[in-house]
Image 1 (cartoon, one colour):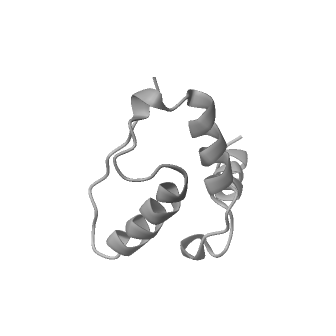
Image 2 (cartoon, one colour):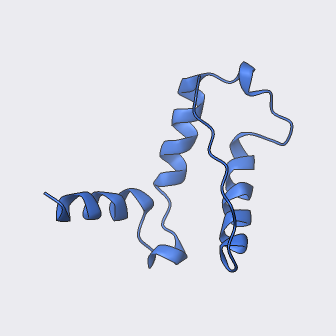
Length: 74
């Protein structure tokens, strides 16, 4: 079963979190029964969302930012 993460919003994070929720809703509408969603469907949506540049990340993709941070620690 996939891991679901709930966050606490602080100040300006509310706007970006709402935007991200809107993107997620493109793949999983409100009231989606996640017991009926396969792990593969979630992974496809995750890959597509992480392959989108984000203004909050200087128009880098989340995967690029994480990969750069990991590379710096090696």
